[in-house]
Image 1 (cartoon, rainbow, N blue to C red):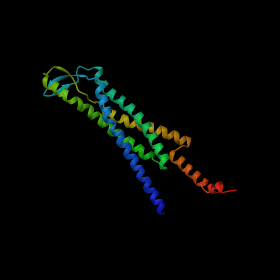
Image 2 (cartoon, rainbow, N blue to C red):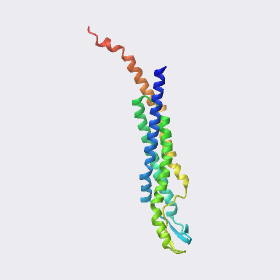
Image 3 (cartoon, one colour):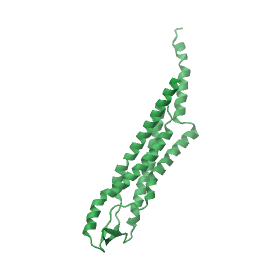
Image 4 (cartoon, one colour):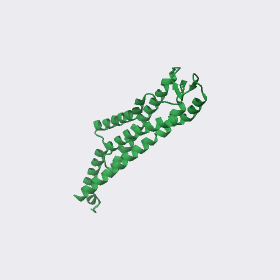
Length: 206
């Protein structure tokens, strides 16, 4: 009984550690992704209407391309992190003989959501200073280059959605193949236990 409780506690600690590590690493990727968005996204032009306000005119492709670049970057991040998180938990589960799938899935989903917000706010913040200076120097009716803005906030869920989809795809393949890591490790443990009693007989002198 005590051994079973100790094993369950150890498994819980492993799941919490794996989920926390996955969340933290995934969320931290929002920083370089935000810098990448700031670096490659085009800036649309806006018209100053006074009192620090602007109007989104003239309308151009750049107005919509800003959101498109962000969604594209988040989509690629979702594919990479979903695949990477599944591979990492698969190897860790084989070594630790603990099912880490749900913990890493939740860590990836929440980490990707946090990372998306970090990337968005960082990109906007990096452009805020130049845009404010240009706005202060402009007069009503002037056309200036806008800073980064994310108009379609639903782009923030692109990364977590694709990451979970990618993760679930590989998990589904493993279930179909009956190759889940905790099942493999349990089978290996049973084989080791079955082979252990035979070892002394094999080593006994003839």
